[in-house]
Amino acid sequence: MAATLLLNVQKAAIRFGDKTLFEDLSFNICDGDKICLVGKNGAGKTTLMNIITGQRELDDGLRWQLQDTVVGYLQQDVVPKAGQTVYEYIFEELRNQDGSHDYKIDRVIAPLELDIKDRMDALSGGQLRRAALARALVEEPEILLLDEPTNHLDLDIIEWLEQYLKGYRGAVVCVSHDKMFLGTISDKVFWLDRGKLKICPRGFSYFDEWSTMLLEQEERELQKRQKVLEYELEWASRGVQGRRKRNVRRLDLMKSERAKLKSDKNALKRMLAKIEFTPMEETEIASKNIVEFHKVSKSYIEDGREKIILDKFSLRIQRGDRIGIIGKNGSGKTSFLKLMVNELTPDMGRVKVAKEINFSYFDQKRKDLKPDWSLHRTLCPNGSDYLDVMGKTRHVCGYLKDFLFDPRMAFQPVSTLSGGQKNRLMLAKVLANPGHLLILDEPTNDLDMDTLDMLEDILANYTGTLLVVSHDRDFLDQTVSRVLAFEGNGKIDGYIGGYQDYLEARHKKDKDKEEDDEPHFEQIAIKQPKAAVKPVAKAPAPASRKTPQKLSYKLQYEFDHLPKKITALEKEIEDIEQALSDPNLFERDAEAFHRLSRRLVAAGKELDSAEHRWLVLDQMRTSIQEA
Image (cartoon, rainbow, N blue to C red; front, side, top):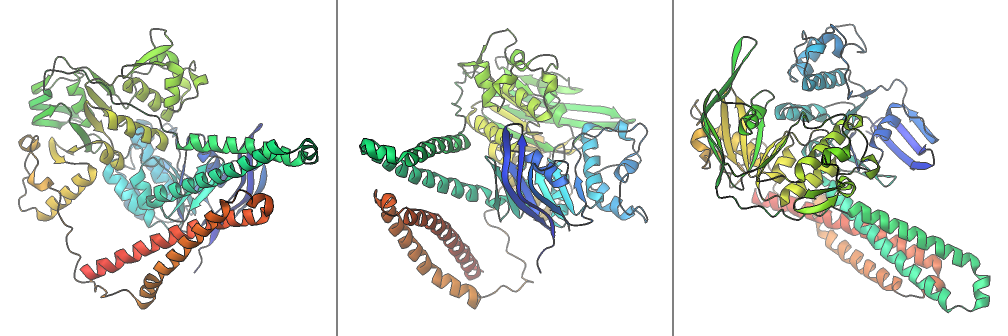
């Protein structure tokens, strides 16, 4: 049964003055769609969201919305009303006010760890964010728009949200930097690329493979256009004067194509460009041990009760360690970092930091940013136009461009920046000279995917000691080799590997648990715990479900005939490329040239699809045989 069409946009155009953001924009949103929206900074993600909500009028084209379809939007900035409770805020604009909200409290508000009796004006920033998310979810709109829903959420809540959205009956359109989150919830990708909306019919897990294929096809097309243009230039240079006059139009078309080809090649080059970061030449330090915690205890009094952060905690951090720190909000992650940089003192025990090291600290509250200072002054407080970046002298405007800032913003005050821009500026400041010890406290909050990829590249080249507090699971997998899990009440467990290794080890430990008391981290801080050993093989599937003995007749027939189809497509592509290599083809038969060019692209897509399908079927066949 076909899904109900909820929203349709056809041949839309959006312009800002003389600049065209979208031209010929078309897309559908159907009931049950789980769409992730991706694109570079400035690609128009917010504008597209506003088109969906109806807040942005089209300059051209049509927008149709099914009658009675409600579009809900996760609020980014929540301004609490004085005296308003969490309950009143969440259910303020709920449709169908009749009936009890108890099931929604149990289903949505409780998992988000909100107290409906709390006052909104007494909540922290993270709690306000969760209240806004709860409000968007309980309204149950037919189209739900989510902009960075995982910011400031604990990992357990993110995993709950993934399952909730997978089962959501309406359509979801989500913008997020959390790649693992997008891969879990989505079944379609809207990719905004240089003013065009490209739609991937599968989820974000396949986006890299699909987008790479499109970019490679585009590169091949540009190469073919270059060959045609070279032929046209040769024709123009050898033509007699009289023929030139008779073919002024052809010459004009050639010049136009040359300009367009140059523009398209530059656009693709910018799209593929990445900032190159060379490894920092680290100053040798005598001490192998960077930081040592020896039987450290730390606690606070909160609401009349003692809250234990560390309890006789011992840990040795050595040169070159790359440690990820995870845990619920309030479990003590930031306090642990502040003890390390001497912003807090322990109640008991000793924290020893090697004397000769220097460190950089990214504070998630961005206290080091002065609102009245410009971006230029923030990076160059001495008034110079140049700064030292990992041992190299860089102009401040060029360095700002590395972090996706327009150089014209250099003298703009920090107070005018968005949350994401402030995070990028803080990262630029910290990463210019990260020192021997780099501490990052929630660096991915409010970052877009481009900045996140750039940050991963920088950290891959960083040779010092790294500590990262983050809720972004993919980011942790890309950047750390050990994990400290703050479980609360002073309990900290250590695991070897990234987040996925931690998850597998924790699940195995929970499954195989024979004792109630787990080993304290101080016993396993340096050596790998037995429970954290990555399983060699996955546990066998439950025997309750009957496993098929072979592929179905239809799948086996498809599997047997795909090699012939692949061979035929490869031969066809080879013949077309041979035909297109004829330099006289365009002049002799322009229509045939264009027909073959179009067919080459289509045949390439068919070949990729056939090869991928064969691999899928082969994997299915192998899995069945092994079972």
